Amino acid sequence: MEKHKEILNKELKNRISKLDTPPKLKEAMAYSLDAGGKRIRPLLLFAVIDSFGKDTAAGLSTAAALEMIHTYSLIHDDLPSMDNDDVRRGKLTNHKVFGEGMAILAGDGLLTFAFQLISGDQYLQDGQKVELLHLLSKCAGPEGMVAGQVADMEGENKELGIDELEYIHTHKTGKLLTFSVLAGATIGGADRRQMESFEQFSHHLGLSFQISDDILDVTGDEELMGKPVGSDTGRHKSTYPSVLTLKGAKEHLSLHIKEAKKALGQTNLNTEILSRITDLIADRTH
Amino acid sequence: MEKHKEILNKELKNRISKLDTPPKLKEAMAYSLDAGGKRIRPLLLFAVIDSFGKDTAAGLSTAAALEMIHTYSLIHDDLPSMDNDDVRRGKLTNHKVFGEGMAILAGDGLLTFAFQLISGDQYLQDGQKVELLHLLSKCAGPEGMVAGQVADMEGENKELGIDELEYIHTHKTGKLLTFSVLAGATIGGADRRQMESFEQFSHHLGLSFQISDDILDVTGDEELMGKPVGSDTGRHKSTYPSVLTLKGAKEHLSLHIKEAKKALGQTNLNTEILSRITDLIADRTH
Image 1: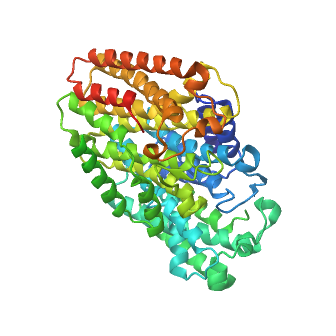
Image 2: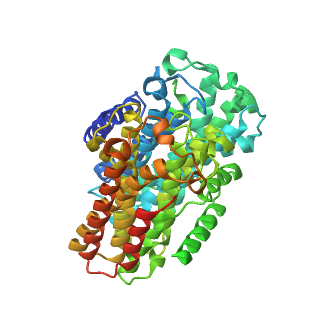
Image 3: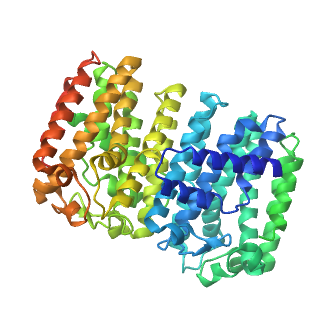
């Protein structure tokens, strides 16, 4: 996985540096892409392709696109009119360095460039590209991540129930994780039954990811996380611990991890790496 | 063309209303889409398809996608951290009605949904879809419209030369007009030589469009335009009249209109409607 992370980071740098665009925009886009993310989504994608025994090179453009979409969402999410965050992953947020206007445009640029990367890929067939682009736009757009972001914004300063909380998270973070998994399954050549199992897997993985995120916001180490602990509570956001108590949230997490692994088992593929990624999410410290 | 405009408006309404997304986001997206635009880009696209004698129905998704991308760019462009405009087409701008956070997300949603529309179209072949999606992302993204927007922002309060001004306009407004024309040519089934002629046409049409926009900012009727006259000058933006004088700008406009029509002639297609659209751009009052 470390090797894949290196290949991806090189690809991201390379694709941005080759862009025919004003240097300032390039700099702003590269700044947030370089900001030391864990690259969980691309690694998930590679691990799914690998579970079919296929060459992960066919997933490189899609992996880069995924990280661009994820990064754009963070840049816009951090803006003063949204979450108003000054620090992310221990670095100043994009708008604190480049100004709000440029940050909005860097986000717009990353979002659009993601579609350019996949549609211009040299390894994928046209049919695969169309499937990937359609899935990506559904998962990232107004029926996916953007819907979750809107629901999150509208839910601030309100007491949310568990259903509303799950709507936010299955959309805001879950849909893009779902894309990572299903894109890998598409590139790997999944049959219908395997696709359904991967859908189940990604659903439970996404919720696990968010619950552990919320738990970390209560119990985490500020230095490891690169952002203040308790920032969600301070912003009066509903979280899993605030709705279910910390103990309840941890039980909920175990349940989803178990279901995620059960779904993996049903694919009849070599899912050892995926299983380890699932454990890492449950046990992560940042 | 009136009939096509009606069909498009119905399609836009229909596609937004069917979205599975929070009502507030739907409302914000629909608000700016409904804001009385002239639909120049979709009409161009339809006119190009028509010049091949092909059924324009095959262009409906792409036309809707185009208008969504155009509308997203206006919403983000109007934001306080960009042009800070309160009024557009005689109506309050998106962020004045829905707030900045929602306006950013409505723009993100429209941009992403555009790719969902084309990739999910039922009339187009996979090969055509990939071509259209690749061209759209290049024309709208960091090598196209977003680059122009960045250059425009960086050029404020500076004296620009004609080359810098042309860079801004060929990217900020030109590239999406280019997409309108070339997407139509792709759907119409253009051969290589026709594609080159349409490229020439769209280049000159785009510049004509922008020059006439700048001239209107000096000579236009505020009520017809739905925004204050002289707003570019007030914002210390370089314009064609400010760089070339009003007389020089008008001469420049005539030249590009002439070149645009020359390119149309070289396609050997029935380009009467396209020729009329070109004239309308030169003579428009708003």
